Length: 304
Length: 169
Image 1 (tube, rainbow over the protein chains, first blue to last red):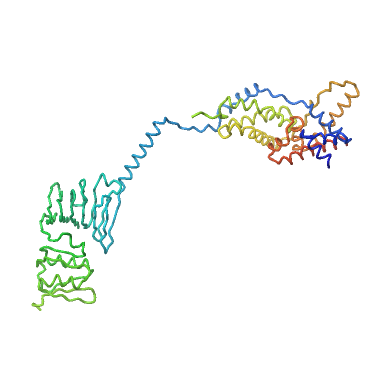
Image 2: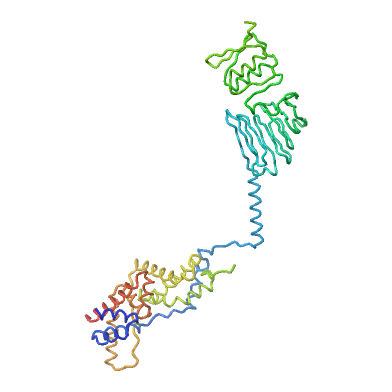
């Protein structure tokens, strides 16, 4: 065993003098030495480097390495910096043009604060869209439905509606759009309305109804009444008021012995049907009755 | 940016060739026992290295060459029986020219050749790498991807088997 270990070390040229002593005293070692010496005299094929390389180069396959060096595209530092800036600019343009869409819930108003702390109160079902990240450069809001605006002072603030665009510098105003109707009421400051290429200035206390014809009405409140969950009317036919009630309370109204073109000025609440009906009927000396199926009848008690 | 040494550059490839070709040739010669076959295998291994120059870094070239040559060798034996030609295996002894000695040398040389033939290819190659090339167990282990201990055992086993075969001839 000892000799075998020594022999293994000797084969790796690592035998110690002590191990050599053991090996030399071992009779079998002679034959191993003889095998080793004889093997070492083996004639090896001499590889000619120059002709070897030449033979390789002459191989048709040699000229085209199948695996090409991966090409690294390098560019000067200045170009790199320029590329980064272009990328930033492009992404900036992209981000600032991203629109933010907001739709108010079906049965509630929603207040939206814009990046410059302008405020929009969006009436139920209304919809606005504006560019949140591009806001400092472009104060523009698209509106469908009705909304009350309190605009912070600054650059021109524009509201785009299907019928026309409304521009202001800093003011409070209400815009109502419905089908082709556009009603702009100004509470503070000055509002410019552009419809069909015509500019109309709306001053505080004025409410302009555009389309189909321009009608000027006065307003007597400091904010639109719907903000406080009320609908208000100035010299409006009763018919229109009843339609508004139907819309808010999901009821159907019928009339009996009444002139539906009676003019009404006033407001009704959105929170209590009985109160609302009273505030509409009382000033006109009318009465109302309700049934269980959400049907409301308006009648003239004197003509019963 | 400085370009790193790459085997796809002809001068880098030539350098690798100069440094590795002889030991690779010996390795293949030990395996095949055939001058011509070993030459072809070596050249083919270098051709493969060139074709894959983008994938192999210069410091991995040696290991790539030995592995590739070994695989190429295994492919050849798969369909072609290796012919034993080990004719020029021994040099004549110079210090002792007595006829008896020469005869004995010649006889021993023939026995050694037969004994080497009786080894497995792996034993023979490991033994010759150790004796003729003077490679350490560590280097042999690296070529075959085995442990140093296993490499040492393979060489020792080969030597013992040679002795046994020679004794019985």
